Image (tube, rainbow, N blue to C red; front, side):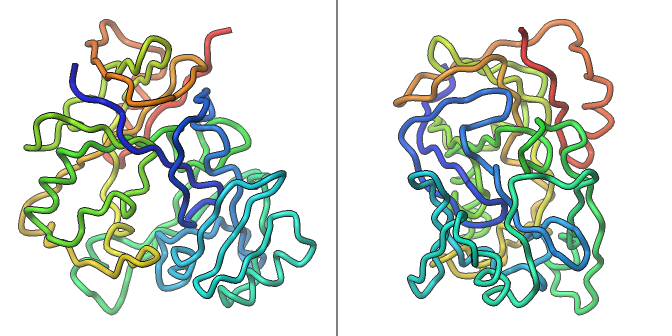
Length: 288
């Protein structure tokens, strides 16, 4: 056994703060209701993402929670809008300062702007912006960047805290599952790609790649102030993993986590390896 399931989170709207949950179903789409909605810039047609913080940083001051038949979005001052409100787009556009549309349907070629992390971390005034394609191998109908499930361990958080105090709040890394590990040293996730994690009796997660370097953890997240991790002094630890569920299952309680080594090569493994340098994962179809 390598640990137990700790906190579980879902993010009903991409790039907004999410909510802690105690139980959920997990399918090939990831956690139920996770990243099923997103804001689309009506001028550019791109997905709004805090990965471009100078344009979309205010997204991380909004909180999205699943309600009865709608997603509840709460602003920092306590004002509440619902995804089904006819004027939701107007309120969100006014708050963010750009015209946006809240949608559950990804564009045909979904893209987002991603600021270069190294430029942000060193405080450069001229930030490079790259266009990232999302969903090229993700489940239809969601707005995950690539993989359906994002994993993080308490060991990774503990190591981050020793290197960059104040930057180790799990909320900054937006994981779906935080795994409580008995050993608080190192980044155990870095060894997981190519392995299968078993949670309880039913849920299996195939770990394909490590999470890519990203500047989002340095940004303010709700009540958590901006942090400036000194990662350049310590290399490039990944400290998180991207996973694909093996079959539909429930995620309930602190189920024990065990790991098995994968044997052979899975379909799509070549593509997954090609993407590994940028930290994306290959989504494979569920067995029928």
